[in-house]
Image 1 (cartoon, rainbow, N blue to C red):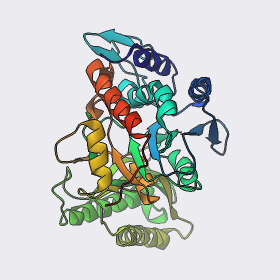
Image 2: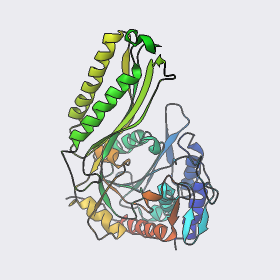
Image 3: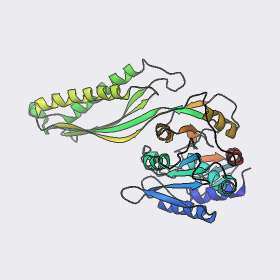
Image 4: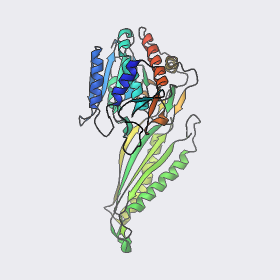
Length: 389
């Protein structure tokens, strides 16, 4: 069983309905107050609107290289889901703790916060940096600012552990992702005189067809460490038109790419631009005022930490994980830390298969295992951290 403090903290964290569509400031103020009671100062890094923020706090000597513990504070909505219990109230049944965010990823957050006192006492040689972000569920939108801040500390950290739910397995890699919205503006008209119009839906379907064809070519390059073992293109939505006898003057398409480590992103973007340029040119023949506009919805890099790195060995020892490292099918903020030059692994309690669903839960045994990992980390903080490969 985990310490009662962990269960209590997790219950309090779940009680904050920190859905990405709203503010996360109340849960951050709760965390800041918890840290302050242990004598730890923290600062908020707000978004442009000021209604959301990330939190950064350092425990221990700032003049030494340290370890980042990273988590996001936002959760996905519960609307339309059939829960057996109140989603924003922790409920313990049969060795499981239920509630929105229990596994993704307030369970890890509670474990870390429960260890703040131990970290404070132990961190005499190696500091711990707490980085808690917002809008991860919208495509890692809140992490770049806090990653930039921690990477630019006078003495940057040399290791980051992102506590996404991996079943306490140590993950060294995942794919990168970018998502875009394509808005097509054509020229409306009567379907009997379609030669005088420019059909936006037709142009959007041409773009979609090009994306499907490009996606098939990406499957020629494979990496068996991933599922699926290739980079992918996926069209998730296509909307346009209002009546059968009207030529639609507007259509919207959304797509995403999930890329393997080593994917030539420049070449992929050039191929995407060619698809859009061709479709735009065909539209212009019919209507010079027609256009295709692309908006980036999210964009984060993949993670690719070497399987023989000292960082991986260190985190595997903390987690008591004695198997080869795994790769993840889902993306995380880890790629951003990795891109900033910080060795990064993903390891945390819970199972991503339970996330985003009704009756999301985390096992009490999983929380206990994560507590043991943090206790092992605390025991290492009185020594300088050396991750020289």
